[in-house]
Length: 533
Image 1 (cartoon, one colour):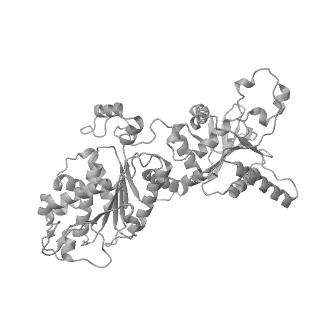
Image 2 (cartoon, one colour):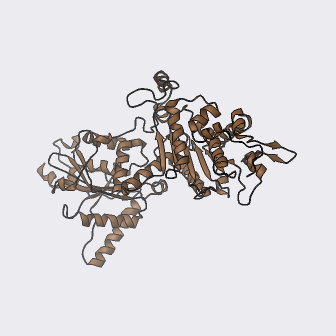
Image 3 (cartoon, one colour):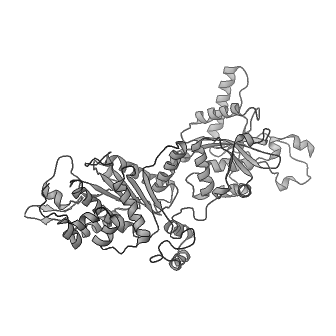
């Protein structure tokens, strides 16, 4: 490599092995041992440990994470240049908006052009020589001076630093590394459609990185994130990693994640010099709780949680009642277009009560991919699997958007009956749940969880268990609430309504079609109660 106008001092070499020293001594940033060294170490481990090429900082607003990662981008290029003799390394900068990405690019330019410590210890990194037709500034990004002096090579046309707009990452640009800074914000995380658009942006980013860089190292991705929703890019990544670990205990994640709130568990401030408790109290008063929770507590739940995790009881089915009361399956389907579009589960829960009114969930099944036919097949299989507990298990299904599904069930029953020569039937009960909000339905179940009177089978598939736990803990802030809805339906009809306790003569039972059925009560399932009254 031609080293004209390049140098590497002993101090410069030391900085290349310590990002925190590089940020504070070379760049002159006013950082603190706590919390900034730990933040730097997350990025440094990504650089030095091939087993964790992906890193993520989920830290509070104002903790310098963007400033640190811009400095780290320069540090990474210097390591490639001097340690790997690779001047052709390409880093793409991605953010929620083009303006934010340009701000990061300008910060990097200022370091390369004007920082004296960099020049003294590494030589000239910026060039502007119109006589030779060389300029580090380019319409597509920034080219490092050593790369321009050595000359370009075929197959590497992208700048050393460039902005990964949605248009560019889908039109042939490539990179060896990605720095993603706040890809989600409060605006693009507001609706499922907006979140899905950012997910597609993220998914388009992955293929442009390849598998390894020119030095033979795994491609690296760093993410700075503020948690706005469980289904933002950060949330989905962490969720997928948890599901993989739950499904395969031997799975080893490639992500090194630092997620810390501004207030520690002991009530002290994490960074008292820059973000003390008095300041946090002021922000809490001036901001909405959801904004404060996302920006400073690094938790998108806010006040929308449902059940404390330690209140979720898992036990083996062997300890469950063998003859449960009110044994039924409850279904939250996802057959309508909107549910399919955002990836909702078709969720099935099988439950029953003991004589002390403790609620047991014997089974839970579900899928995001089931078609109508596959869901019907799953219900027939469910009926077969649980016939020892009930010969014709009642199946409660929300009736909204389900007219086509009722017709599909009827057709399938007719075909099965003709094939077997006997009646094949699903004991479906259509339930109108539109009279209450989701949280009103959940709230009826919440006291049972708080009292430890809801028990869930350990034998449920690991992936479904993870989903159930996420929904129960997150509540309204969860990405999905399908199993929570199905579980809440287990309460329907068990406790008679107050208005049923009067002594008036009950109205005769009338079989209703979907969309006409009111909320079911115990009498709908046990007609003999009418005669008792």
